[in-house]
Image 1 (cartoon, rainbow, N blue to C red):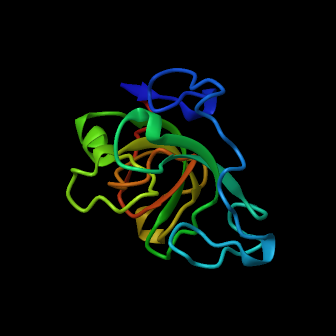
Image 2 (tube, one colour; image 1 turned 60 degrees about the horizontal axis):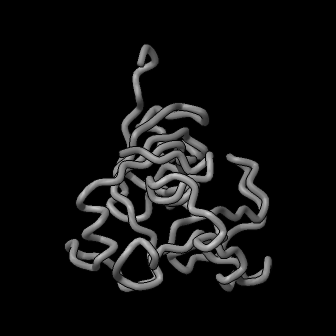
Image 3 (spheres, one colour; image 1 turned 180 degrees about the horizontal axis):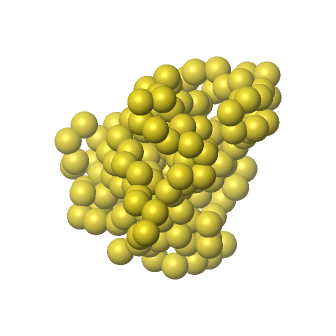
Length: 165
């Protein structure tokens, strides 16, 4: 099952409704202290993408368990390392492994809170290493293993979708 986060869907189940969306429940550091999910300091401006103090929405598992443990929260945008590509998520996959992540039973599942999600498709925002031959706007599929259920994902595992598709 695919979900389109740009259309307000929530973990593949359609509109989450007001009881699930709780913006402001997440403590985001001030602009001069902003960090990404790995704790790295986020720059105020990224030349490649034009992101200014970017934030994004993410489906965050606050505890292991049922879908009711997921919350849509504002998070700092990830900062890709030199070997990663920054991808704007358009569609996510939702499969058994994602359910096992949410339950805390998938191998190497991080402790809560975390963003689940094995796979996504979207467009390149920052292209990463030149040997990948990507440019902003290229359509890609990605397999970050964790974290695909958010609007922006930094991952080294990407493949360009051929143009005729």
